[in-house]
Image 1 (cartoon, rainbow over the protein chains, first blue to last red):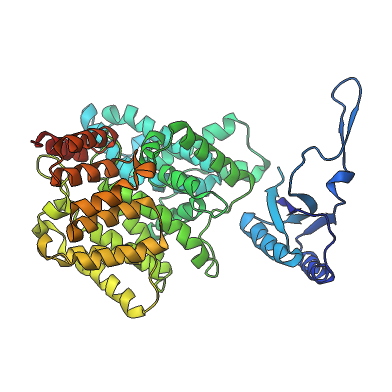
Image 2: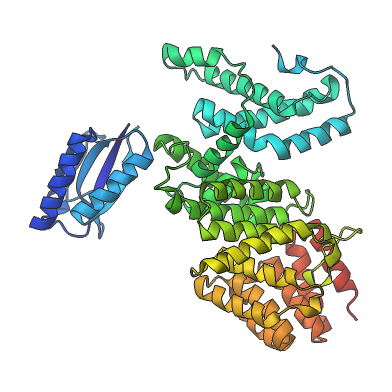
Amino acid sequence: MQYLVSVIHDSADLATPDEMAAIDVFNDRLQAEGHWVFAGGLAAPSSATVIDSRGEEAIFTDGPFLESKEYLVGFWVMEAPDLDVALKLADEGSKACNRKLEVRPFL
Amino acid sequence: MQPEARGAAVPVSVEVAGEAVTQAHHQEWARVVAALARRFGDLDIAEEAAAEAFATAVQRWPADGVPPNPGAWLTTTAQRKAIDRIRRENKLVGKQKEAQLLYDDDPPEPVGAIEDERLRLIFTCCHPALALETRVALTLRMVAGLTTPEIARAFLVQETTVGQRITRAKAKIKAARIPYRVPSAEDLPARVSGVLAVLFLVFNEGYLATSSGSDPVRHDLTAETIRLTRLIRALMPQDGEVAGLLALMLLTEARRAARVSASGELVTLGEQDRGAWDAALIAEGHRLVRERLAARVAPGRYQILAAISAVHTSARDVRDTDWSQVVALYDQLVRLDPSPIIALNRAIAVAELDGPEVALAAVDRLEYRLAGYHAYQATRADLLRRLGRSQESRAAYDKAIELAGNTAETAALTRRRDQLG
C-alpha cells in the first residue's frame, strides 16, 4: 500500500540546515525500513503552469490551478501496510521537516 | 449444510418470529458485523450483508421456526449474502481469495475471540483519522445497530447528513486502509479517549432512547456499552477515565428499574423509588469512584460525572442530597468542558441549592445554543412551573413534547403540562 505524504506550508522557503539534517535522518530511516518510494521538494507555486488540452487547443495558464495561502511544497511517496503505520511515519516526518503533512492513500 | 435446516422447522406466529428477530438484532448485530468485517475486510459488505441476513430472518422464521442458535444462523446467512455480492460484483482476485470464500461453513467462534472481534470493530469505527461525529455515527450503526433515522435524532442532525457521514467513513476506511485491529499497548492510551467518547454517547442513547418506535430505555444498548467498557478496563486497568466512565455507567444503570413508572412515564431522579435501585451496581460504582479518589490524580470529565452520580446515589432520600457538593463538582466540570449541556445540568443542581429563579436565569442564557434540545425546554418548563409562571411553563412543555422522541419522556411531560393550573 502506498501513501502520498504532502508537505503543506505557507512559504516555499528552503528548509533550514537543522531541518535539512533532520529530514536526512528521517529519509535514511525510511530507506532502511523499506518505507521509501520517492520524495522531493518543489519550487514555488508561482513557477507552475496549468495546461488544459481537453478542447481543440491546449490552454496554458501561468501559475498554480488553485491559489491558496498554504500549498504543496514537497512530498514523500511511502510504502506502509496500513494507515496507522503511515500516520506514525508522517508524525515523525512532520517533526523532522517542521511542517504540516497530509496523508492520502493511492488507489 | 443449509443454516435453516439446523433447527426443528416449527412454524411460529409472525409476532413471535418478529419478536425473536428484534431480540436477535439487539443481541447479535455487532457480532454478525464484526465477524463479517474480519472475514471480508470490508465494513460496507459486512453491514449490508448483516442487514440482508436480518431481512431474510423476518421472511423465513415465521415458516421455518426460530433457529436454536439465532446468532450462528444470522452469521452464516450473512456470510452467504456477502459471498453472493462479491461474486456478483466480480470482486474476486486471485485463487487464494476464491478458496477462502468457498470454505464458508466456519465453526462458531469461541466466546473470547468474539469479544475481541467487537473490540476490533469499535477501535476501527473510533479511529482518530475519522472526525468525532463520524466515529459516533459509525459506531452506532456498526456496533449498536441503530438505523440512520435513530442516529440523526440522537444527535440533532439531518438523516441525509448521517447517511453521508457513514458512507464516506466506510469509503475512507477502505481506501486509506484503516486497520481492523485493537491498537498496540503503546498506542492504546491515545486511542482510548476517542472510544470512550463514543461509548458514552451510545450509552446515553440507550439510557434515553430517542426513537419513538423503540423502548424508552434500551437495556441492550446500555448493557452492551457497559460490557465493552469493562473489556477496555481489562485492557487498561490504570486508566482513570476508563474507570470513571465505567463507574458513571454502572451508577446510571443502577437506577434503570426506577426510571420508568408502571404506567410508562419517565420518573425524574428526585421522584424515583430509591429502594428499586440496584444496590450491587451502586456498590461497584462507588468502589470505582473511591479508587479514583485514592489515586490522587486530577480527574477527567467521566470521573467527575461519576462522582456527581455517586453523590446522588449516596442519598437515601432526595432531601438528603448534598447539593453544594453536586454544584461544586459541576463547577469543576464546566472548567474542563464548557459545553452548554453541562451548563444546563449544573443549572438543574443550582435550582436545588439557590432556588428556581437563579437557575432559570442560567438556563435562559443557553437559549441560543439549546433551543432545539428537548431537555432544555423541559428544564425551563419545570423551573417556570415551580415559579408559578403557568402560561410560560405550558408553552415550554409544548416545545419539549414536540422535541422529545422518547415515549416515556413524552408521557411524563404531557402529564406535567396537563396538571398546570
